[in-house]
Length: 248
Image 1 (tube, one colour):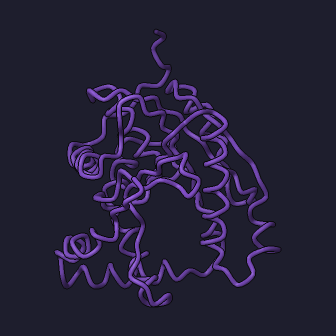
Image 2 (image 1 turned 135 degrees about the vertical axis):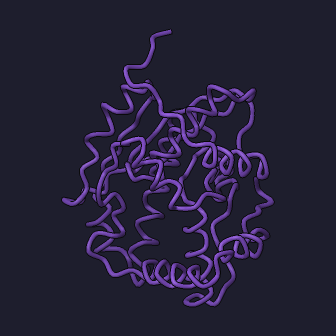
Image 3 (image 1 turned 30 degrees about the vertical axis):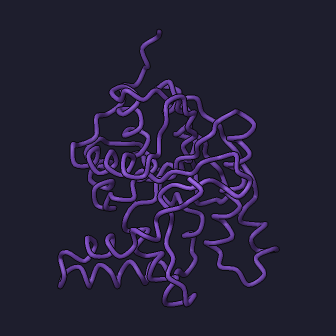
Protein backbone atom coordinates (compact mmCIF):
# COMPACT_ATOMS: atom_id res chain seq x y z
CA UNK A 1 0.00 0.00 0.00
CA UNK A 2 1.47 3.38 -1.04
CA UNK A 3 2.15 5.87 1.75
CA UNK A 4 0.15 9.09 1.34
CA UNK A 5 2.18 12.13 0.24
CA UNK A 6 0.60 14.14 3.07
CA UNK A 7 0.45 12.61 6.53
CA UNK A 8 -2.81 13.13 8.44
CA UNK A 9 -2.56 15.34 11.52
CA UNK A 10 -3.53 13.70 14.80
CA UNK A 11 -6.27 15.81 16.40
CA UNK A 12 -6.03 16.69 20.10
CA UNK A 13 -7.39 14.21 22.61
CA UNK A 14 -10.28 16.51 23.61
CA UNK A 15 -11.54 16.67 20.01
CA UNK A 16 -11.14 12.93 19.44
CA UNK A 17 -12.85 12.16 22.76
CA UNK A 18 -15.88 14.38 22.04
CA UNK A 19 -16.31 12.98 18.53
CA UNK A 20 -15.74 9.40 19.69
CA UNK A 21 -18.35 9.74 22.43
CA UNK A 22 -20.95 11.09 20.00
CA UNK A 23 -20.18 8.33 17.49
CA UNK A 24 -20.63 5.75 20.25
CA UNK A 25 -23.69 7.32 21.87
CA UNK A 26 -25.59 7.52 18.59
CA UNK A 27 -24.14 4.36 16.94
CA UNK A 28 -23.03 6.38 13.95
CA UNK A 29 -20.43 4.11 12.33
CA UNK A 30 -20.92 0.42 11.62
CA UNK A 31 -18.55 -2.22 10.33
CA UNK A 32 -18.29 -2.08 6.54
CA UNK A 33 -19.76 1.44 6.20
CA UNK A 34 -18.73 3.51 3.22
CA UNK A 35 -18.68 7.11 4.44
CA UNK A 36 -18.82 10.17 2.23
CA UNK A 37 -17.72 13.35 4.04
CA UNK A 38 -19.21 16.62 2.87
CA UNK A 39 -16.18 18.90 2.83
CA UNK A 40 -16.45 22.63 2.20
CA UNK A 41 -12.88 23.41 3.14
CA UNK A 42 -13.92 25.20 6.32
CA UNK A 43 -12.29 24.52 9.67
CA UNK A 44 -15.09 22.17 10.77
CA UNK A 45 -15.14 19.80 7.78
CA UNK A 46 -11.32 19.71 7.56
CA UNK A 47 -11.16 18.90 11.28
CA UNK A 48 -13.70 16.12 10.85
CA UNK A 49 -11.67 14.74 7.94
CA UNK A 50 -8.65 14.24 10.22
CA UNK A 51 -10.77 12.86 13.06
CA UNK A 52 -12.25 10.24 10.73
CA UNK A 53 -8.81 9.40 9.28
CA UNK A 54 -7.50 8.88 12.81
CA UNK A 55 -10.52 6.76 13.72
CA UNK A 56 -10.11 4.75 10.53
CA UNK A 57 -6.58 3.82 11.57
CA UNK A 58 -7.34 2.97 15.21
CA UNK A 59 -10.93 1.76 15.50
CA UNK A 60 -11.83 -1.95 15.43
CA UNK A 61 -14.79 -1.02 13.21
CA UNK A 62 -13.63 -0.95 9.59
CA UNK A 63 -15.00 1.62 7.16
CA UNK A 64 -14.12 3.34 3.91
CA UNK A 65 -13.85 7.13 3.64
CA UNK A 66 -14.23 9.55 0.74
CA UNK A 67 -14.97 13.27 0.50
CA UNK A 68 -17.13 15.48 -1.70
CA UNK A 69 -17.17 19.25 -2.24
CA UNK A 70 -20.15 21.09 -3.70
CA UNK A 71 -19.05 24.30 -5.42
CA UNK A 72 -22.01 26.74 -5.57
CA UNK A 73 -20.18 28.79 -8.23
CA UNK A 74 -19.71 31.87 -6.11
CA UNK A 75 -16.89 34.26 -7.00
CA UNK A 76 -16.10 34.40 -3.25
CA UNK A 77 -15.42 30.67 -2.97
CA UNK A 78 -12.27 28.99 -4.29
CA UNK A 79 -11.96 25.35 -3.17
CA UNK A 80 -9.13 24.55 -5.65
CA UNK A 81 -6.70 23.75 -2.81
CA UNK A 82 -8.83 20.79 -1.73
CA UNK A 83 -8.21 18.52 -4.73
CA UNK A 84 -4.42 18.23 -4.31
CA UNK A 85 -4.80 18.12 -0.53
CA UNK A 86 -7.22 15.17 -0.57
CA UNK A 87 -5.10 13.45 -3.21
CA UNK A 88 -2.03 13.89 -1.02
CA UNK A 89 -3.89 12.30 1.90
CA UNK A 90 -4.98 9.42 -0.33
CA UNK A 91 -8.68 10.11 0.21
CA UNK A 92 -11.01 9.54 -2.80
CA UNK A 93 -12.49 12.91 -3.74
CA UNK A 94 -15.53 14.06 -5.70
CA UNK A 95 -16.08 17.61 -6.88
CA UNK A 96 -19.51 18.86 -7.91
CA UNK A 97 -20.01 22.33 -9.37
CA UNK A 98 -23.54 23.69 -9.70
CA UNK A 99 -24.91 27.28 -9.91
CA UNK A 100 -26.62 27.08 -6.52
CA UNK A 101 -26.43 30.84 -5.97
CA UNK A 102 -28.14 31.67 -9.26
CA UNK A 103 -30.77 28.97 -8.70
CA UNK A 104 -31.45 30.37 -5.23
CA UNK A 105 -32.12 33.83 -6.63
CA UNK A 106 -34.69 32.39 -9.07
CA UNK A 107 -36.31 29.70 -6.93
CA UNK A 108 -36.18 30.61 -3.23
CA UNK A 109 -39.86 31.62 -3.07
CA UNK A 110 -39.74 33.05 0.45
CA UNK A 111 -37.37 30.44 1.83
CA UNK A 112 -34.22 31.63 3.59
CA UNK A 113 -31.09 31.61 1.48
CA UNK A 114 -29.34 29.42 4.04
CA UNK A 115 -32.14 26.82 4.04
CA UNK A 116 -32.39 26.73 0.24
CA UNK A 117 -28.65 26.40 -0.27
CA UNK A 118 -28.36 23.70 2.40
CA UNK A 119 -31.17 21.70 0.83
CA UNK A 120 -29.63 21.94 -2.64
CA UNK A 121 -26.17 20.91 -1.47
CA UNK A 122 -27.59 18.03 0.57
CA UNK A 123 -29.40 16.72 -2.51
CA UNK A 124 -26.17 16.80 -4.51
CA UNK A 125 -24.30 14.96 -1.76
CA UNK A 126 -27.02 12.29 -1.64
CA UNK A 127 -26.72 11.80 -5.39
CA UNK A 128 -22.93 11.47 -5.25
CA UNK A 129 -23.24 8.99 -2.38
CA UNK A 130 -25.75 6.88 -4.31
CA UNK A 131 -23.84 6.94 -7.57
CA UNK A 132 -20.64 5.83 -5.86
CA UNK A 133 -22.16 3.35 -3.39
CA UNK A 134 -21.55 5.25 -0.15
CA UNK A 135 -24.22 4.44 2.44
CA UNK A 136 -23.31 7.14 5.01
CA UNK A 137 -23.01 10.91 4.63
CA UNK A 138 -20.91 12.63 7.32
CA UNK A 139 -21.51 16.31 8.05
CA UNK A 140 -19.43 18.57 10.30
CA UNK A 141 -22.01 20.63 12.20
CA UNK A 142 -20.96 21.08 15.83
CA UNK A 143 -22.67 21.85 19.15
CA UNK A 144 -22.65 25.60 18.48
CA UNK A 145 -24.52 24.97 15.21
CA UNK A 146 -27.10 22.81 17.00
CA UNK A 147 -27.66 25.46 19.67
CA UNK A 148 -28.05 28.23 17.07
CA UNK A 149 -30.52 26.09 15.11
CA UNK A 150 -32.47 25.34 18.30
CA UNK A 151 -32.93 29.03 19.10
CA UNK A 152 -33.66 30.02 15.49
CA UNK A 153 -36.38 27.38 15.32
CA UNK A 154 -37.91 28.52 18.61
CA UNK A 155 -37.65 32.26 17.94
CA UNK A 156 -38.65 32.36 14.28
CA UNK A 157 -40.41 29.07 13.59
CA UNK A 158 -42.30 28.47 16.81
CA UNK A 159 -40.96 24.92 17.06
CA UNK A 160 -38.51 23.09 19.31
CA UNK A 161 -36.12 21.57 16.79
CA UNK A 162 -32.44 21.14 16.15
CA UNK A 163 -30.20 19.05 13.91
CA UNK A 164 -30.32 15.30 14.48
CA UNK A 165 -27.12 13.46 15.31
CA UNK A 166 -27.89 10.38 13.19
CA UNK A 167 -30.81 9.65 10.90
CA UNK A 168 -31.76 8.00 7.62
CA UNK A 169 -32.79 10.22 4.72
CA UNK A 170 -36.35 10.22 3.34
CA UNK A 171 -35.41 7.86 0.52
CA UNK A 172 -34.13 5.37 3.08
CA UNK A 173 -30.82 4.71 1.32
CA UNK A 174 -28.33 7.04 3.05
CA UNK A 175 -27.65 7.46 6.76
CA UNK A 176 -26.58 10.94 7.83
CA UNK A 177 -24.19 11.32 10.76
CA UNK A 178 -22.87 14.37 12.63
CA UNK A 179 -19.88 13.20 14.71
CA UNK A 180 -19.22 16.72 16.03
CA UNK A 181 -22.51 17.22 17.89
CA UNK A 182 -20.59 17.31 21.21
CA UNK A 183 -17.75 19.43 19.81
CA UNK A 184 -17.49 23.19 20.33
CA UNK A 185 -16.64 25.46 17.41
CA UNK A 186 -13.63 26.82 19.28
CA UNK A 187 -12.16 23.30 19.30
CA UNK A 188 -12.21 22.99 15.51
CA UNK A 189 -10.90 26.54 15.14
CA UNK A 190 -7.97 25.82 17.46
CA UNK A 191 -7.13 22.52 15.75
CA UNK A 192 -7.30 24.02 12.25
CA UNK A 193 -4.94 26.79 13.26
CA UNK A 194 -2.53 24.58 15.19
CA UNK A 195 -2.37 22.01 12.37
CA UNK A 196 -2.17 24.67 9.63
CA UNK A 197 -5.04 23.02 7.76
CA UNK A 198 -5.70 24.53 4.30
CA UNK A 199 -8.88 26.32 5.34
CA UNK A 200 -10.84 27.82 2.44
CA UNK A 201 -12.00 31.34 3.35
CA UNK A 202 -15.69 32.25 2.91
CA UNK A 203 -16.47 28.57 2.58
CA UNK A 204 -20.22 28.76 3.26
CA UNK A 205 -22.20 30.17 0.33
CA UNK A 206 -25.02 31.13 2.67
CA UNK A 207 -22.67 33.68 4.24
CA UNK A 208 -21.62 35.50 1.09
CA UNK A 209 -22.77 39.06 1.76
CA UNK A 210 -26.05 37.74 3.14
CA UNK A 211 -27.52 39.03 6.43
CA UNK A 212 -28.16 36.04 8.68
CA UNK A 213 -30.33 35.24 11.65
CA UNK A 214 -27.74 32.59 12.52
CA UNK A 215 -25.07 35.22 13.13
CA UNK A 216 -27.44 37.00 15.52
CA UNK A 217 -27.97 33.76 17.42
CA UNK A 218 -24.21 33.16 17.56
CA UNK A 219 -23.65 36.59 19.11
CA UNK A 220 -26.53 36.11 21.56
CA UNK A 221 -25.21 32.76 22.76
CA UNK A 222 -21.66 34.08 23.07
CA UNK A 223 -22.88 36.92 25.26
CA UNK A 224 -24.91 34.57 27.45
CA UNK A 225 -22.02 32.12 27.81
CA UNK A 226 -19.87 34.87 29.30
CA UNK A 227 -22.33 35.16 32.18
CA UNK A 228 -23.22 31.44 32.29
CA UNK A 229 -20.15 29.29 31.53
CA UNK A 230 -22.15 26.03 31.65
CA UNK A 231 -24.68 27.28 29.08
CA UNK A 232 -23.79 24.82 26.33
CA UNK A 233 -23.75 21.88 28.72
CA UNK A 234 -27.30 22.78 29.75
CA UNK A 235 -28.36 23.29 26.13
CA UNK A 236 -26.98 19.87 25.18
CA UNK A 237 -29.06 18.26 27.92
CA UNK A 238 -32.16 20.13 26.71
CA UNK A 239 -31.54 19.27 23.05
CA UNK A 240 -30.57 15.63 23.44
CA UNK A 241 -34.13 14.25 22.96
CA UNK A 242 -34.41 16.36 19.78
CA UNK A 243 -31.13 14.96 18.46
CA UNK A 244 -32.41 11.38 18.52
CA UNK A 245 -34.03 9.84 15.45
CA UNK A 246 -35.98 6.58 15.27
CA UNK A 247 -34.94 6.22 11.62
CA UNK A 248 -31.23 5.71 12.37
